[in-house]
Image (cartoon, rainbow, N blue to C red; front, side):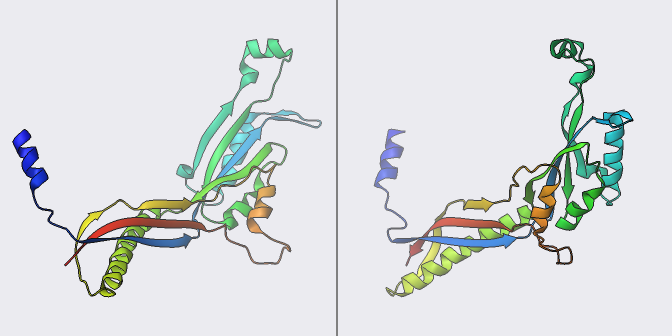
Amino acid sequence: MLAITSFAQNAPNPYPRTITVNGSAEMEIIPDEIYVQVYLKEYDKKGGGKVSIDKIRQDFLTAVRSLGLPDTSISVSGYDANNYNPWWRKKNKKEDLHASITYQVKLRNTAQVDQLDKLDDNATQNFYNSRTTHSRIEEFRKNLKIQAVRAAKEKAQYLSDAVNEKVGVAVTINEPGEYYQPYYGDVASNRMVKAEAMNQSAPDQPQADFKKMKMRYDVNVVFELK
């Protein structure tokens, strides 16, 4: 083992002359996956008693499905049914508390966000978009990494030309580091977030897209000089 190590240390460097460069690639994307959190809670209807969480859930799912969304776009992200806990009722000296549920809905654009106006205003306690992304995000990542490496090679070529050198093989290529700026919405009461997302100053103005996501990759590459 010692002999092998000594030999390796004394072996000539196959790439005694190299050039190290950085390459980058970036793009902006309009998201087509918008994740909205909807917090629903039982409430007391004037003159009609309490509206149960079961009815609220049923009405909510009907409203969402009316947009043509598959059931896979709807998921439960939180559920609180303390009103069914005898200990909790006793502790709070209340016979009937209000159950709540939080849904996450994946939408495609701001138009669908605005179409969620069929929700029960009394049951809807919070409505906000938690994040946005794109259905082809992995494809974009791959292509940007390739572009970043190609940009590094192009830079190496014109820099080496400046000193009358030629670029050889790539000695090392580091995994490109990603800068990714998705959009995370601020919590807004009820459905005020829709007006913010639409960025409308008048009802007849065209709908605005969500804020673009920015992706950037930076890579460090070492090339041989020959």
